Image (cartoon, helix red, strand yellow):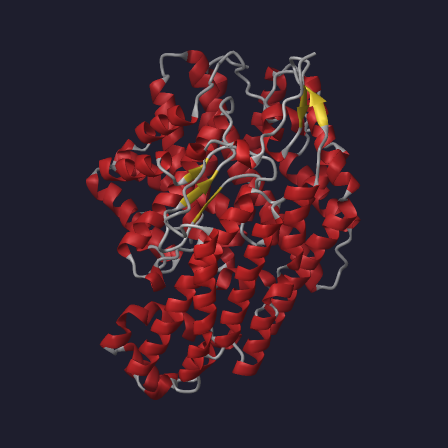
Amino acid sequence: MSDSKKIPLRSEIAKGDQWDLKPLFESDQAWETHFTETSGKLGGYEAFKGRLLESPEQLANGLDFHMEIFRALENLYTYAHLKNDEDKTNSGYTGMMDRAMGLFTSVSERGSFIDPEIQSMDEEKQREFLASPRLEKYRFFLEKILRAKPHTHDEAIERILAMSLDVARAPSQIFSQLDNADLTFGEIEDETGARVELSHGNFITFLMKPQRDLRRDAFMHYYRTYEAHQHSIAAALAHSVKKDVFYARVRNYASCRHAALFADNVPESVYDNLVATVKENTAPLFRYLDLRRRMLKLDELHFYDTYVPLVSAVDFKLTYKEAVEIAMAALAPLGEQYTTILKQGLLEGWVDRYENKGKRSGAYSSGSYDSPPYILLNFENNNINSLYTLVHEAGHSMHSYLSKKHQPYVDYQYTIFAAEVASTFNEVLLSRYLLDQYQTDKNMTAYILNREIDNIRATFFRQTMFAEFEALIHGDAEQQIPLTVDALKNTYHRLLETYFGDAMTIDSQLDLECLRIPHFYSAFYVYKYATGLSAAITLADRVMEGGPAQRQAYLDFLKAGGSMFPLEALAKAGADMAIPEPILKTVSHFEALVDRFEREGKA
């Protein structure tokens, strides 16, 4: 039996495989200096308190100061959270992030008078100020503040709410530390007989193994850890939901969901349309799961059978640099300028590539207005999901890059609703590129079809199930129904039955899945994956089948950043998410892929 394969320490990762944070701060000491300087400027808020509405010039000066502070704070927080995510066991960087968040709370507290003062304007003054050339760059920013007037209180209450932010983050922070730093999943024996440490980073890789006993062993080991901590995690999730209920009520929203969707100006009908349309169209999903069961020659399909490729003869190993080359070819329809900028970033400092001990699991794109759009990965050379994750996060990063290039600081931050379009759009292009490249290779074609089908299943159907779970548990909390561990698992189990029907045997361990989803601590986030994929499929069709005008319309959407509400920006690009058609188009696209996969005789 060979030696155990251990996850490397951070110090064992080559510098060229780590992101370069020097564009943010040259060193921790530079961060400390900037932190001190920014903290020392907070007293400047007093010069504007109670005087913002003396003139458009005075309001503009106050907002300029406010944006300067937030821009500095954004740099401090970005550096701290990136360093913290490199190694969650490094208490020094945990403390640095806590200080950055504490400073954010202080800034929010000092500036808590801004929104109430702006909202105190009568209609005549609103017209005067909004027409002022000095406030032109703040027009959309001001319109959003005025729109939120029914949900904003006077300065005293806003100050208290700002002071509560540190406490409100407790459930999320507790879960994150537990999930990323403290939980261990033991070792399992892989197909070669080696003892391998199970982790977030390699869990899905094990579920993709052809050996069913190995898949089942990884699944059971993984969830055994969550079962041992289920009461603590359930308490953290329940209190995160209670936090959402508190803020929704104190700000006079009709519900937690209304509060979450308000900032994006997304009607709740968009959310309801997604859930209802998907639930009415699960037949193609059930048919695919039955096809998967038959192709694997199983009497019963279990969750640990849903990741293994159905075309196991294909070898798709690739290095990180090879993945970058494939990404550039796949994204070529977006133009040479797009791919040239992206390639340089992916190879020269944007990306933290590989897993190390204590590193945050998963992947994301992050950054500030003054930094590159950084990407955290846990890249694995033998996992095609890593290629898709790279392309996905690259979509986010190029969205950020183009937004920062074309928008002022006040309008550069696009909403998450829009963000998920850019990332899933890139995944759609990647699948189409791979299918074209391997059209003469039947095994590879089937493999890529299988991968795209499973991607839509996970991003569209599964995330919609997550979205319904969030709506249900928040509804329970709003009716003061206790969110005990059994209540959470029972709600989740009912949804598993709805979204998988008789096509999959639901092991009791799978009920625990609701306790391990980090996005549940950012309420009503996950529905944006499903709507984002639907918009992406619609827009990808337009770009691939259209000409320069359609490509430019999509790039203009990326460049718009946060300068308009997301539904308006998407409609301009060619995807109207206020109607069911994009959702139905995704269902039809999924069904067509299943039809093609089955026709090619792989069942």
